[in-house]
Image (cartoon, rainbow, N blue to C red; front, side, top):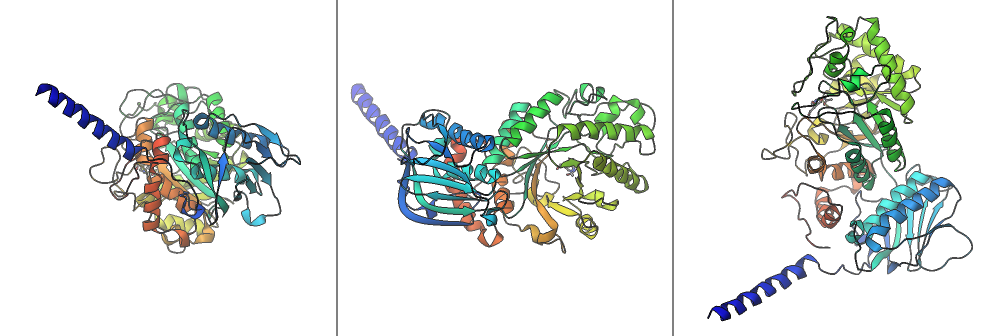
Length: 527
Ligand code: IFG
């Protein structure tokens, strides 16, 4: 009997295993209809021609126009493809030869509809041609190629499978020129490699700005050579009191370059005059009392202020912005300006006016949270709407542009629902549908399409301490916000998006993104 039971249980185990194996690794379907492929953000237009292009070890990547930038983009493509395929695809300048099965990257400056970041992908059974007006458009097109290949392409180990892409044409370009994410590295500090991982992930969804919240009450995170104690002492702790840290100027430069190589612009923020306790602990002379503040590891806001009637403060602002501007090729310096509850408005306004002039003096454009619209905005100022609609209105009345970051829709530190262990809910609980079902031009009366430079999703880190937690809070909501920033509202419907997001799950798994598997989505469990 015992033997019989052993035989039965062995059989049962084998049966269960083979059932499990069949439902988790269903062979990838032959891609034949390009219009059925899931691409997020959703492209402008897709037409199918019913065949399939096959990537093989003999595929070559050609660049039509000479230039280091195209070669670098082609090498990105080769690097994206090699771990899972095992192919080491060469990059060559295109000549007359057109060997079958090749990939061609070309710039076409007459296709003006594509703009700075648009691209056209023509796929036949013999060749895959990616054309753009600008190099950034080629890089955005690479992300689409990645999503057209089987999800195994994102695995970092060799996958024995065929690599087919459905044939047809994709023509695509973004709605908004500013499509961003913000990472708060002040409440909790994140190492360079974590920030690079975040850059990799936002690049995959065609975002093009990363705003780094580099200073706050709990930490100063960027080396300033003329005020060394800011990072050394002001960066020595974080929320909760364990850990801390800062980026040396060399590390910051490395991050800027890493982002730039992915056509992502870094927007550095030094929050002031409020949210400055870390600076106030580092230098007594920055405090009106002349006495240094204590390090702070809690999560209250609105209790700190620079001493706005002391000239030392403006020397400090000038030195900090000057060093940061030198390190930042992007056009913006973000001066914060939020929640300055300890700064009387009659002091706040002249401070912000002077801080703006300092940014201009160092050749940069002013960027700030919506409260700075209470000051006199300088030309080309960008105001980040997060909470007060009247501030957004004041901004456009002064000719400013607005970045839409409504806390009730885009704050990735908001809990998904009351059971989410991480995050806050002062603005709202934000489930995956709520983060998608909104329209930037309908958030503030009078703030219309022509006033909106773009969209940005901030992730505040009071309760977020590591990369897994960053990914859990950011994904999948950031994917939907990336689509809102890229895709026209006429092409965005929740039911269509939730279906595509569910089918996109194998790519999230292959990328090892620690995403929140919302019950609102039918997450596909096999490729
Ligand atoms: N508001 C504060 C942030 C952060 C956030 C957490 C802004 C502009 C609440 N300011 O959002 O520093 O504490 O959700």
